[in-house]
Image (cartoon, rainbow, N blue to C red):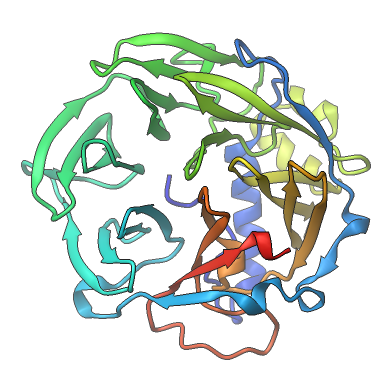
Length: 371
């Protein structure tokens, strides 16, 4: 679902209360425990050590950013928790207000795509969005349907699916659908289908007792990537197959194993007593791996880390980020082949910085090869 950035855009007045509520919801909806994987190959083991982290103020990386404000108008207002996809000279932004908005890469608003409703070419809500460069189409997942539009907003077709997916993507010749831990539907969490939505392969056998995960789990940058919050493995989708990229270890910050066996309503209070870390975003290109790590500290405000690994030289940098409501640093979106890391949000990096949160967020670009 759109609420992938569970700590964004909180006002100072209600930040503490909403963080507690959202963290509880996050744990309830997202927890999983299976470590099984099918046809995923062998990946690299990585170890997260937060003692290596430096503060944002200690790195010049973010001072060399490029900021592209997205045009603010009555017809182009972006809601909370926005997500961004880029194709060529096009930005596509979707958020909790239920609209997909099309901008050019200068930030100019071009058009809206689709409408909320129940009529032809409309959708009741947005579950996930995928921009297909091959077909020059924007595909919106909603209520077991995929609504397809051209870039200029023209409705093309409506496709029915039988998979109760929370997130989806397309590779060269296949669709990918993610249901999370939905045992009422299947013992598997991830499904590959053909273009008629017949299941070709099933992945990630699930032995968890937790509720289904509800979040986008794909990133479509240089590589199409897949991850799950509160799981330790991250994947690439290559040649229409799932390939294990990395297994992440969190020494001293592991999820307690007993939680795997607990009922959903019991696990929230249980985990409040523990200190653990989890993956919130994973992206990769030929040279770099990027991970966003969230350190959950029970009732305390979580800590955010940007973890960038140079695959060729082995160098890694971990940057600790404050939880700043509305900051782009909390919302990484894609990593392109030319080493540009795209975020969406307001250009806030430190406490006390003033921005007009009434305006649309910006697209922020960082060249991680500067590191």
